[in-house]
Image (cartoon, rainbow, N blue to C red; front, side, top):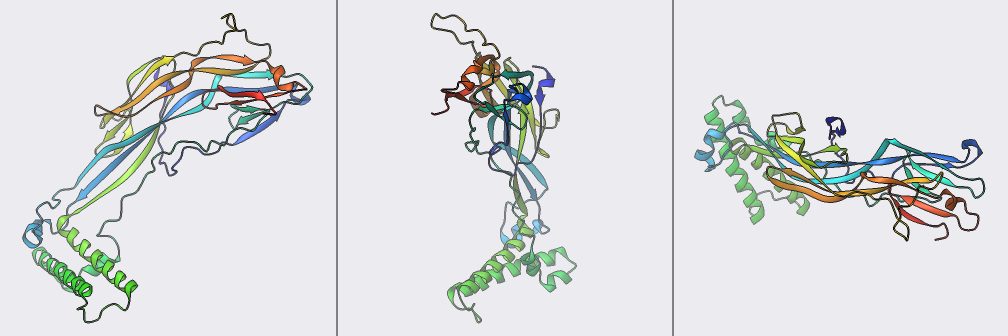
Length: 363
């Protein structure tokens, strides 16, 4: 496979499914187009969605006093960042094959029409195609949760005395005292011993949530903060008819998360593809290869391949997929679609160009 055949596209994925219903265009065979319907058969691309978690840790301003005042032994002491792959999914998708553009030639009579995708790949003839609602779910990118040090509660937690003090040691002492005061206040409210208890359950919840947020902010000043976000990127591989072994499609960097394959700062994420079956021309009852019908409606008879994605010695996604590139083109007699008594319909798989249904329109 040449480097030209590897197309890498990266994007933030906000949706939870891959492409919903496809847009389509309907073209009817008539005098204007001389009863010829033009379309392009697909080749199969593999969209590989990779999910990674990126974790950042930052020390609090009082980390040197965490053990002394709060007994915290595992406070964050340095800025750090790490990343790990948490999942992957392989999704086949049809894209136009510029070398497979065909014209299906029909005869006047029963009107035939073709349903095409917006990039001219066949969806159906004399029928409406499926909606694509069975598209597989893919992971969604998620931002990191807000730090305890963000928001109004964190500002409320800093007392005037803490703000005035010029000594970090004194600030830490006052912050620890404030933490214990907040805990005592919460305990008094829950036990019913507070001098001015909340008026009702809703008010109590608001007060307790605020106390908890203030305590979390002050504690983070000692223990530090750790946040995790999830990113999802899509890498598109367009294989040819050859096996692939250990092809680097992306990398994972501890600093930058998911990066492109040529960024050597990251550890490689690789793909392997093993051809399982090549598409074969159909044969008749005698075992003889059928001939392509004159003016026939071309379609793909795909082959199949086993595909796996690996990282750090472990397989993170795998599956067996039909691929148009491993197949061969054959045709349907166009007379079937304009038969006056029982015209046929056909439905195509837009991922491979294969015929998934060929039957009379009445069925």
